[in-house]
Image 1 (cartoon, rainbow, N blue to C red):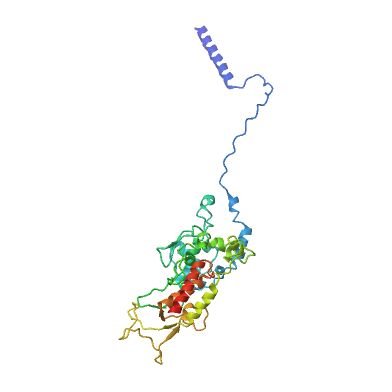
Image 2: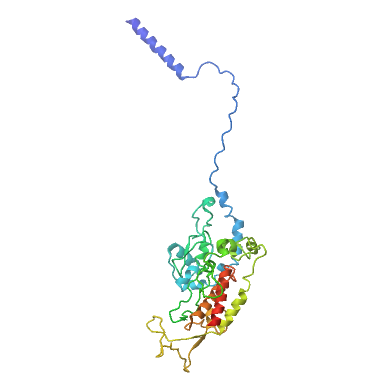
Length: 386
């Protein structure tokens, strides 16, 4: 029995020694280090990651910011001359104030503003809608680059396919050409009748002129070269030649023009200035009368027993006459009422509208030369024959 216990004890000791040898470092000394192995081949370069702040800095830097602000001081937007309208006319606030434009784009609703401010950087710019500029283009953090439905005709959409859509939000007419009520006359009901001061987009588009029949045809809408081969921003925001043009002045530079007009930048459409002067002279001789209208507001003229419209008489019993030159409100000394309240022939009213459209476009016809020529030439012929 004692021998058996002794054998068991020896087995336990032997097993313990084995376990120690398995879990401890070898007791033999280390030998010298072996020769280094041959380097492996280089791995493949990884794909470039997304561009970070370096790309942002191409626009968001002090130098570019200072250039933008310096040029902006020469712009009509910075002047804010009509910003006061936003305080009393909600319909004007959209384009005459910072607050109105922001509210219109974000909510679709404007109001009267107690302290409206002029158009500024944050009027047009907010946050980027995309950062994939390589594939989706630069949006310049504009508040809206979506296609624009016209104020006067929501069924017609202007789409410049990019940033120029932001311009079209405001640079469009507020009224449409005169409409014949069936009696061949048109009544002027506004003291500032006409397309308003921003008809550039529709003029460039080649629409909403009063297209009188005449010796010149009208080109198809959207066919003007500046419409098909250029844009608002490419012409009006080119590299400045000294901070007083291009960039954020929106004054076209000669460089922007000569990229296409290699013979030199055109100064308006040939002969158009002379035709505009000729049309203005013809309109000076046109007379509008104040007529009596039905009190129910349906716009119908009051007629006498012979079916002729009844004119409004002054204190002396004479018909009240208004010079049609007032409609074109171009500084004529007798244009105090701008033709408001007077009725003119439909042809005369169309011609006056076309004069205003081309004048208010302010490009001297260059936005759409063919359309300008046709509108003014045919208007001259229409008034001459009227």
